[in-house]
Every structure is written in C-alpha cells, then in structure tokens.
Length: 265
Image (cartoon, rainbow, N blue to C red):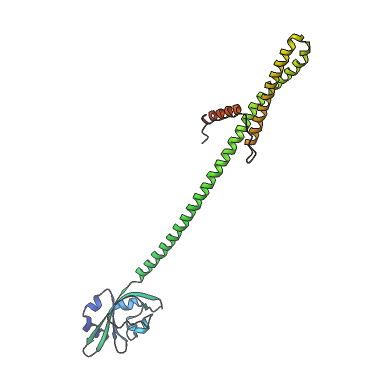
C-alpha cells in the first residue's frame, strides 16, 4: 500500500530520484512510504522507516516541518542516534482515498556541513597562528632594536678603550724624552754655578724658560693619560684638555676613523 501511495503521488520519480523521499500522513504524522535513499540516509531498513512518526526521526521535534517550504540544516535521527543534516523540501498533496499527505524530499548535507565546520576550525586556527606570528614579529623587532642599541654601546666602549690604550701608549713614549729633559735640566742647574757671573744671568733665564716648557709638556702628557683613562670608564668626569692638545687629538681621531678596517665576516 505504501508503494502504491508513493507511485500515485510521484510516479517513477519516487524510485529514480537520488534524494531521499518519504510521505507522511498529515493527521497522524506517520510515515506511510519511503524510498530506498530515505532508508539509507536514516540507516534503517526500508520497512522499519514506514510507520515511524515525524517526531521520531527529527532531532528537533518542536520544529514545525509540516508547513510547505524549504528548510536548511534540519537534523534527522539515524538508527545509531547520530544526527544526519539535510536540506528539506516540503509539499502538501492530496491523494484520493488516502487523504491529506505531506511529501518530503531531503538531500544529505552532513558531509558538506562537516567540511564547512572543519574549514571554520582551520580558519580560526590560522587566524590565531597569524596573531601569534604577528606578536612574535613585534617582539623580535623590539629585541632587534634593543640588540642594536647594546651593540652600539659595546662598540663605543670598545672604541673608547682602544683610543685610551693608544693615547696612553703615545703618552708613555712622550714621557721618556720629557723625563730625560727634566733630568738634564737638573744637572745643568748644578753646573750653572761654574758659569762666569757675566754670563750666569743669561744662563739662568734660559734654564728657567726651558724648565717652564718641560713642566708644561709634563702637565700636557699627564692630562692626556688622565683623559685616556677617563674615556674608557662610562660616567667618569670629563677633563678639559689644553686647546692645542684637544685640536691634535681631534685631528688624530678623525684620521683613525678614515682608516679602513679588515672585514672579519
């Protein structure tokens, strides 16, 4: 009888359609006919489908599925109690001798729905990974800037230390002749008593002049040594050099900066 009703409503279309098709008696909401695709979709035997009520195969029994129209994302209950998501088309028909019926045509969208949910999950994961990557990139940029600042500080300290060592070496070489000059002046001072009185005044004046020059050289060398040591210590008090020494050191520094360095890479 069920197949007879289906053939009266759908003809051969009932069995040849790839969609699941079933008929429900409107008054009782019981399935009176179903094709093989409907049985396969619900994972039941075909005879087991006939006689079930619409509420027994619907996951949302409170949802009105008897009104004509097209329904998206309808969850039907399979024999394993696992939901089957379908697109549902509903139409009202009247068959003489059988009364008012409701014809359901369903297309299984479970696989598409699962793929969409998987795609959303992957998109969410990708978005999260992108946010993490952007945060890591910003942190890397900040770390790079801090490293550049530290490298500049280290390079400046190394340059100052090298300059201090170089200037100290130069000062050491200047000290030797200055010391010899001071020693010579002391010996001359002891011998000046033997100079005749007529020449002693001139000799004393020359010795005083040479002594003044020697002390000035000693003071300048001491200032260079002190400046070289201070430059290697961050935060140390700066010492003002005599103008002529400052000019010489500035020129010397400029010359050093123009000397090409060997590439160690």
